[in-house]
Image (cartoon, rainbow, N blue to C red; front, side):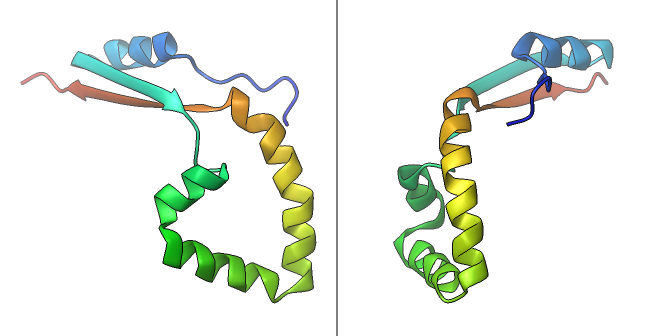
Length: 91
């Protein structure tokens, strides 16, 4: 989606936290599933998902935007993920 764009790795984030003087660094990673149908439903719930899709469906401009966006996101999702970093500030 963005040629040449590089994201920080888990190791990069740990180094950033260590350089800031933080300790007891813990990380968790996983796939970015929000932009998949299953992930969207899990995140928003059925009722809210239906409301969102209803709002999108009533405007032609929104339909065009989603028709442009969804195929591009579908290609990118396999390469996306998340990193959660937690650390402790020294006393």
